[in-house]
Image (tube, rainbow, N blue to C red):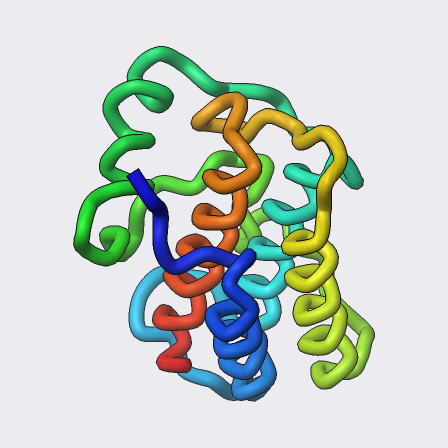
Length: 154
């Protein structure tokens, strides 16, 4: 089954990056507890764990791999608001206070999305879903980022 949209589709990727660049320091959240800078940290950490830049505990289990993953990847509806976040990605509790200019943070996330999309080496397992194919990672990357951009109305 084809997974769409995906970061391998350059139009979808460029549209997503354009939405990242539309973020503002005062972008209001529509749900959840993260502010916009914490959200960018959260999304970046997830990309970095897939790329192997950081190491996070693998908490994958049968339920997440076989029940949650098909819904997260194939269901024709948006991810639910206020879903659970794995502790290592909880930006409200773990994100550092960022001294970098907001515009620089935005550009760092945009560059990370491009780097993720061009990655062809070995992927680290997803912390909850376990091993993913390249195509699944590309779909997950788009869907996860889209979810959090919608959280901030972009």
